Image 1 (cartoon, rainbow, N blue to C red):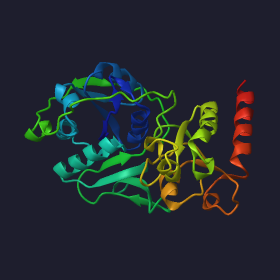
Image 2 (tube, rainbow, N blue to C red; image 1 turned 135 degrees about the vertical axis):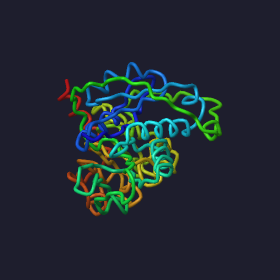
Image 3 (cartoon, rainbow, N blue to C red; image 1 turned 90 degrees about the horizontal axis):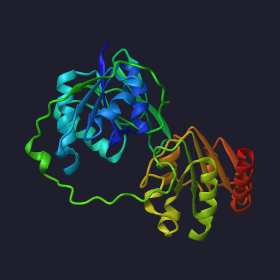
Length: 320
């Protein structure tokens, strides 16, 4: 069966959930071959094998940690040339999209970004995307070369599928550009104890209707009761009520959780572009004419200061 390259997103060998989702999608079109770069490859291999990787190509070098992006592109290109895959899948993060674009350029292939589904078609791999601020769903395939595709987190379930997971060393030669941009320092992100926004299965967001930073604990309490990530609209971020790193929208982060709860968010097109592919959308807004109600699965017309605490209390009661 044809092989599909999957670039592994991991932290010291701890494989992140979006990569396991990529393995689910890769099995639809071929045999997944995982590429693990940097420290911790051994720890990652067993998890990757449990989720369908028939082979695990590993490479470790200081360049992966000390320099930006290009060393990983060099390594992925080496894997591409060694495997001759039918497709290359990368997580649709900022770094992932840059790696994918550089690889596509090097190997003369087309690229598809922010796919939400993949399937094998008669003419090659077909990718589903949301276009024009998620107002349309399109199906695309590349017209030249091997498709390089970035996939949004939460686009597929994580499905264990034990495979050989044979570990093989990948030989990588770094080009001159690999050391062009050096990492001079790193600052660990402070942990909130909540899931990463773009990877969370549930996201609870607050907007202008929250009416101040002092009221965002209401949103956080609901999120914590659900084990969810916290998001914010651009209006809330611009007002200084919540960090920009939590902004959901066209100029913020794009999310696609199983459940998205929008509290006090009117539903401007900029915000909808970042969350419209969520599987189930719930809105709480006292304005019955708010645009957000045009796309929701469930809508609550009411004051969030009354509705959200009651919802949080009910969830905690049922959990207890």
